[in-house]
Amino acid sequence: MNPTRGIALKLVSALLFAVMSALVRYLGARYPIGQVVFYRSAFALVPLLVVYAWRGELAAVVRTERPLGQAGRGMLSIAGMFFNFGAVARLPLVESNAIAFTSPLFSVALAALILKERVRVYRWSAVTIGFVGVLVVLSPHLSGDELTVAMASATSLVGILYAIGGSLANAGTVIQTRRLAESESTSSIVFYFSLSCALAGLATWPFGWIGPTPTELAALIGIGFLGGTGHIFLTESYRHASASVVAPFDYTSMIWALILGYAMFGEAPTQAIVLGSVIIAAAGLFVIWRERRLAMMQRRHARALHPGEAATTLRTP
Image 1 (cartoon, helix red, strand yellow):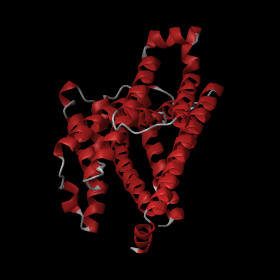
Image 2 (tube, rainbow, N blue to C red; image 1 turned 90 degrees about the vertical axis):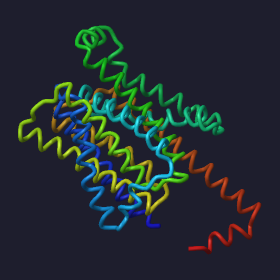
Image 3 (cartoon, rainbow, N blue to C red; image 1 turned 90 degrees about the horizontal axis):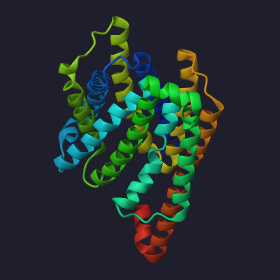
């Protein structure tokens, strides 16, 4: 374990995903979502397969004991990617990014409903506060003239619905990943995720893709390479540090979204977006802190009940 390296890798992955989102925003709402999803997923397979081949893990990539479980996760991933890209193309980067970070809060609710996990009042409070933050972010769209304009153009309204749908789908993906992780390797989960989304994106070809210019083609391919490389750095970060250590650094992508949104598109965040983002981030960080605290308490309890087994476990490399 090397927490410093794990945090550094996580920071790089957050930057890569932020740049990827900026390129999706650059292509805008005029590009079919399915076309963007295809390039994102198909070209993401290139760096992933290169790295796994270099490690000699290609056999593990395609091996799966639960094909139906992989298919179920694939469906959720497809929905999440379509929704997320639809939101990024229609909303300012920092706004779509802020709403996306409600996914851990949805995960708490789904874990209680689906996995029957015991969720105490602390985490439910964090979920409630987080959704208050969402209302703050959306408040400009819910007031008078802005609501009229949003409904007239439909772009902002559709973007908001996409963002919320994407957050909910991503939360479902997290729950399904927890189930798959019991028997499936990380490489196979990532591979089937990318393959499923690539096939789903390709299926939209008959509905009218756009012939990209050389610059736009470079952006489409870049989206795929950045997504695939970001996944590699993300996975590697968890090899060097526990999830509770590196997960909070996901929120640095909000800073990158603010910087890239302003530099590339002149999107200056409103006070409501900044305040709401801070509230959502605080709620999400509290959930992460609470999960870490509960895990530590469970380990202490296990060591107290079985001191001999705990000592053996600690000595085992």
